[in-house]
Image (cartoon, rainbow, N blue to C red; front, side):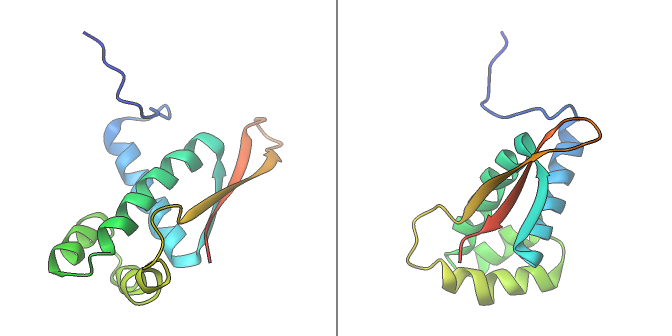
Length: 117
């Protein structure tokens, strides 16, 4: 039986998708914005918001969970020192998607994902 698990395949294998989400989330946390296509932007928002929500606990388990997904130590440090205090009182909605138009090469719809300040 085929079941829809409410995620986008993005035309890549599951391992490639997981690596892509990790890399895009790392870039999002480091630079606080990333430019990509709209379907990828929607997936990276889901992934990043779950990670920020896990990190808001700010205990050892949260740090281990974040280290398992994001391997860059500087980014993990920034999440716990900058982003978690920023979103302490906020219940979700840590990111915004802004559509920027169409890419010239293949007419893909582009978007910018930003962290809410």
